Image 1: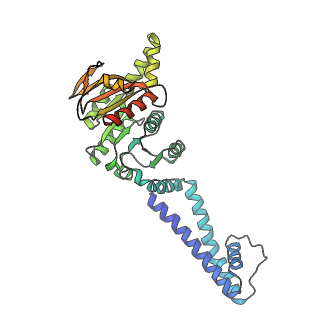
Image 2 (image 1 turned 90 degrees about the vertical axis):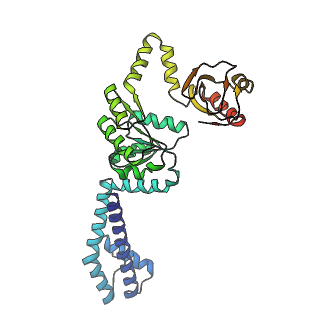
Image 3 (image 1 turned 45 degrees about the vertical axis):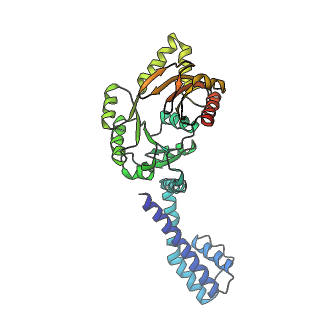
Amino acid sequence: MMGKTINRFLLIVFALIVLVGIGTCAFSIAENLDPFDAFYLTVTILSTVGFGDITPKTFGGKLVYIGLVLTGIGVFGYAVSSIATIMAERSIFKMVKGVLLFRGDAKLRDHVIIVGWNETTKSVCDELRSNGCYVVVIVEDDAMAREVSRSGYDVIVGSPLEPSTYQEAKITSARSAILAMDDESKNLMAILRIRDLNRDLKIITVCNNEFMKKLFYRAGADEVVNTADISGRILASHVFEPVVAEILEDMAEAETGLDAEQVIFKSAGTTRIRELRDLGFKSVILLVIRDSQKIYYPGDDFEIKSGDIMVLIGLREDLDSDKGILEKHFGMTT
């Protein structure tokens, strides 16, 4: 569909250029006009404005005039109406976005594909952007695409069930895909489609009940988040432990306040947590994962080894500083 729209638009533009060019050259020769006056006369005839300040005086010029009137006005009128129709259908938006996305194609490596646009996916995009991730959003209609674009994200208009949509989003080089459309059946079918296109891609989706959670896992999802369960727990916490609820909400976003971060320790040897503190390390080490074993609240004498996954909690500025310490002295990946 987008290819047909582009071809139609280019054909109309080409026809207009050829028509104006022929008229300009013909008037310039027949009427001995300078190129600008010949161009001016051609445009006034085709647009039916006809000021009358320049008129053909020779027999040849009058023949050119008659030819443009009989054929040119119809072509010009069709071109104008066709362009208006394309813009009215908002197909031109798809074309422009396609070009813009293609121009940014070099960035489509290790990116995150977001399927659907609503309050949930907007929050997902904002959080990913805060953490330095590049995202591409897939939506089904132009109105939603304009909303995504206004929010500052690249967007692809297409069906979440069509392989071509994901191919345009460079699914083979993506880091992960997050599906959070309002229709859970579409999420399910999209998981099957994505898994068919990329067996290794990490797929994350949302659900509202345990039954759908099991279905999503069976379809090929790697992670399924029960948003109803999580939001229900936070709502309940506001009743009897409101401070805890506020902290949980604060940690859920990365821009300010408390946050959690996952890092992988890359030192060649072992390092005690006390040594990190001596270097100015401020974050709380909530958890260390080693060979699938979870070690909560490791003490200062605990030795961290290469390959250990650490879950840190702290203020955003402290986390950034501590990641710099780990990177400088020990090697670290997020």
